[in-house]
Length: 460
Image 1 (cartoon, rainbow, N blue to C red):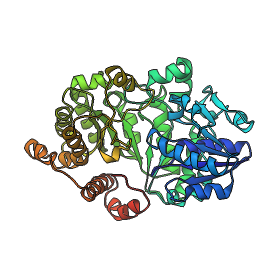
Image 2: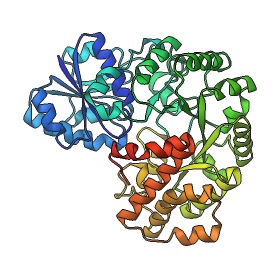
Image 3: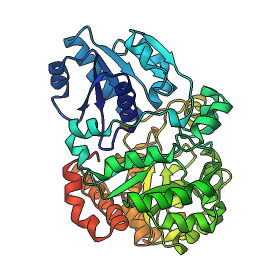
Image 4: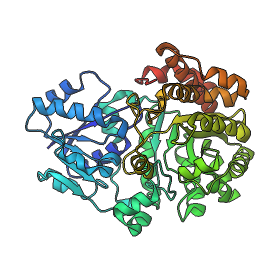
């Protein structure tokens, strides 16, 4: 069969790459299509696929439905297949006219059924991480050249997360509810085989690449981390050599051994430290009651002592009594933890299947119709009063500057009330993005920044 895989956004569609690899194991003809192209539907129709496969993040789900509807109108016989996190959390989308089949769970175990004409919902059972097909990167880069030249590409070794954050669809309790505790441990909390990771990395390294974002939710998780990371780091340094950006939590960064941190320092140039919030009540709301500012500060200082650049990450626009005051306190906390550090501050988004989504429904909280789901816009997911929405958006735009240059509270309060037009909003997004790239990659980051933005559809 001809299988069209439709990719959305500026980052690599990692889940779709695994789907492509699985289809190749079944000797299917695959082609990736770039949904950022205005004529993507025309391209799809011209290729005349039998199956059109989507694995959209929540932010791109509506766009995927639009593309699916358009192609089904012009090719009535085509079958539209949806998978990934969003589809797994909301399998009821199978009732939509633009969706013929939903794969709820990993792709392994679904291809035989979808090739056989299955419709409705296929529920798959997680097996072992080593069962994953090699991502179809060669075909992906062939079909979407802008991704081949993208400075940063993504990889992961751990498919799940041990933490139970209320805002995240990868939360441990959510995956246990979906697949069972044993499958969660076996499939989501064990590393992919090292030889598979290195083979994938070699394919990436054959293209222009300045860094790899390691998208494990917490790089220091996994029962075998004390043995696995040193072995991985030695192999990566010897065979690949590309610098890595990784993410972690204060708890893990404080618990892991000096040996592991030292080994990782040889291949990692930047660590994203998930602070998310500072107030204890906000941390409880986010399912992170195990964290506090003292631990965050200690973790930051430990990572810095090993020579890592640290990217502090935070979420604002929470469903609390005064979301603006809470957001400002988070920014002040980031300054106390690591003034001068690079910062990524995002507006809260409400994702399906999360504890926070249930809480919002229970409280009758209204969603913000201006929110597209893209965190780069700074627009919060909840319908706060207009003044609060503006201030939260401005905090997201300006937090990088506030922390990097240790801006005082009076200046912060004055600046978050400024009305920004679209052009200013775009320039602020570019400025904070550039700062993050340069702080990670140094002078090279400044040199390649123009190429970075030329190859992306910036949402601001």
